Image 1 (tube, rainbow, N blue to C red):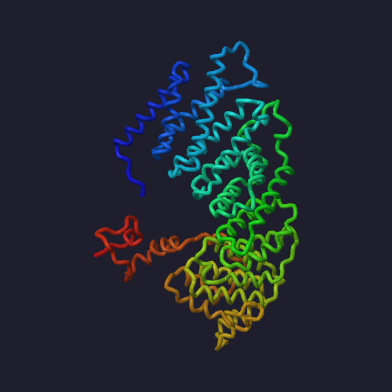
Image 2: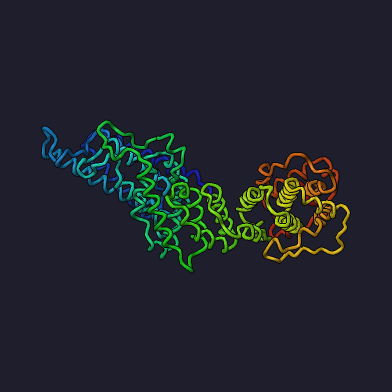
Length: 521
């Protein structure tokens, strides 16, 4: 937890901010006060070196140079010609302002890369982007930057974002604020098309930062339809700056082809996983030849864990939208239902995809029975919220495949004295699930948590006519079940014996579940 700011420190920060604003106002109102600008820049430089708060100086300099750009006090005409009736002193002053602007810009870039406080590095990024917008509207030199959009400025920002020193994830929320603008997205993909190279994998931070940045600038339908511009086009803007999907699509394909060169036997799991996320969320819909992903996705399916699950989603997309057939895809899906899946953040995605893959009523009954039986067996050891999901999923599968009624009958009559199901058989068709019963669900009817026991009772009753809607419970957490159970009238009337960690200090954690619902006596 961050230390509480003392009143004295807060007063000092306010005093510094007022002092910087006063210096900025005096400078903007009089050229005689040019030394004020140097003092503000010097203050920012010292704050970076001493790791002090940067935001007051960043905001002050952002306002100052935005005003200077609006006034065109740093503007140089075509061919670097002097402005009409401009004296030598005015030329020197304009050149001096341009030097101070470049100095400030470089300091802001340095703060993006080197500042340890995420608040200050984020503000440095935002200030740079706002100056970029101002410079696009009021260009400094039409010869140096012939494009209406100041692409060189954006490139320098991206270069600092792709730092090898640390993760950029704290910066992403700030950068995402600008991803709704079509020109930012378009130019970012253009810039990155020449920056993404195989050598990036030599430093894991650089590779991951690149992937996180790509994921923050999706060229989705909403961005294209809204067509919002961060730097509005003027009448004299060149045609080449207008958005063309085909051009940006080429950049996306080039970037992905370069990323695919990262694949090697010792590729880190974090990079591999993030590659799949970028593919699914940003790239796949724009690829010219998605069939080339076949080997990559099939190899990824064999990796296990979150990588396999993300690859499965890619496989599903190619099957659904590109009519590509994958061998043994159901065996891969079957193998993903392992106990460790309940401890990943992608488990809801697995249930969602499995529900879609098993939605066809033309699947072999012994194949579906294997999934039903595996889910039933895992429900005995799963967290309660996942057990409820699996029970309703099993119910849906039984509804879709009437031939599985023999499982229900065997369960209700408990006809199977020995369970022939082979849990460790990799081929679901050979698992003998169709000849077993669902005794696991009967056992769950005695579960200590009422919501689980209630969900398991469907096996002893006529099946409903409509399927359960899994989307309503996929995001339910263990805390939600706890709150639901503890607030019921029946629970309030009962007494519980609890085991809890022995405190090592005089105080227990604040807002702990134990303290909120029980009193220690």
